[in-house]
Length: 210
Ligand code: SF4
Image (cartoon, rainbow, N blue to C red; front, side, top):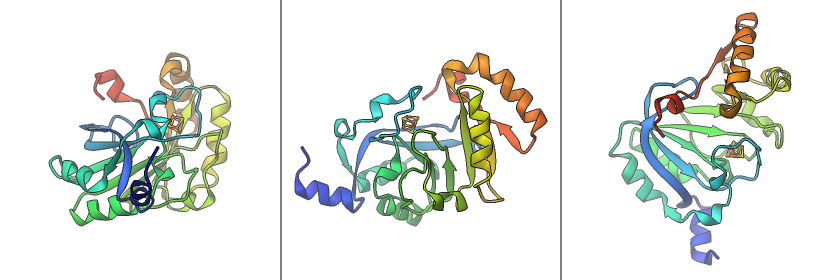
């Protein structure tokens, strides 16, 4: 049970339920291959059945952590953070991202877009989920649309989502990891026939890094 003082700090974004933080290589999407400090925030109610971080879902399992201490850790590693989850937009991202940018650190987010956008971002990767669709506003500001392909119907979902996105957004199709052997050849064919899309692979899993 969170006490009132802590809850107040969480509401202001001065504390966040931190699941883990680590320096690694961004494995997927537009910035694949780039070193970045990952901040994984607990809490998600989207419920993707293939989710590979189900342990993130229950925010109460992840200690409320001072955003200032996260920022101090980030400052030791490079100039880019990726804030992921869980679903980070369940929380107020304003304090963390403004202070990171004040320290000349670029802020990237990976989000389903299902919650209102808070925070100041250098890069927004929108990964919509059928279970809980993005709110409308995020389509206009997303830099990257990343659709996870678990089965054939996800190609249709990808096209529906691409119709909503701004014209500068880069489009990616990414095979869901457990189904990659089946879906990757279909994605290859799809991208050759629809070259506005690119393939994203979870290269960190092939590299066996976090
Ligand atoms: Fe897992 Fe992300 Fe889906 Fe949440 S939105 S259930 S964290 S894959």
